[in-house]
Image (cartoon, rainbow, N blue to C red):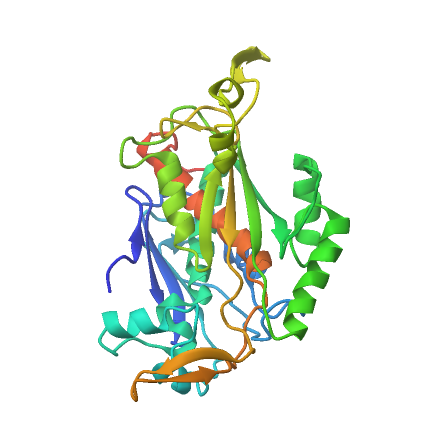
Length: 367
């Protein structure tokens, strides 16, 4: 299986399967001298850990991170940094049926064909959302490196099952409120309605999707490598590696196709003695390069395909049509647990491009 690595200067390679022994990541290119403790990585992992609320999967995993290499005396050494978590709460019995009856909305059938029936189908194998734990582990390192540039990444839920807030939360509200509720929404009143929508779908044996917005602050001008390593293109590619992502838009996004150039262009201004723009329809990226404004993008997640309602499928061995009722432990909505994953994905791309642009000092201890 190829396609398990991402990045040029900050290169990550993830490994493991949903019901295999572990999920892990190797980072090649992390500079030496970065102070790093297990607690810092664990803090990020805990944000996506399953089994924390009724709207999450009942699968309870500790997701306790371990360093295998690349860290000595709580500092990075410059060697490949390997981290993993062990899979402990695994029940693979129900997946024997899905081996011959592919679940609608999942990668069961194309994976079976591509890998000639040798793929690990338990829990979705390499196509499970559990693989994103590797992204979060790497993202914890990337976030810390980016803090040396005073760069901040803030993701929050803006819509679930059609329930959305009509107000734009302030940055301070996003910082203070997002992780205080189960749905990771910066609007406390709407968060209650979002949770109700998830529980309604769950009680009906169904699921819902939603939208996450991410804001990246204090991005230096000029990050990106056109034309094929555009900053927004790389961010989008990384985001699409998250299972269930079906759409990404920057700034005004699809709405920019409905307005005129005079409305969509962001006029340049001088603000506090610095170059800025009066609006940010570009979402902080022009020509594949950061323009110094906040990078703003939104990610659409489809409803969780694992639902308990009876669905139409096929028996791949008998080549007959049949039905299936998906069992197992699943999230009725993946959006809340995806918020820290989105932050991690953005951080991985940004730190890779920052290193490519020589913005992070790699020659001495990083504080």
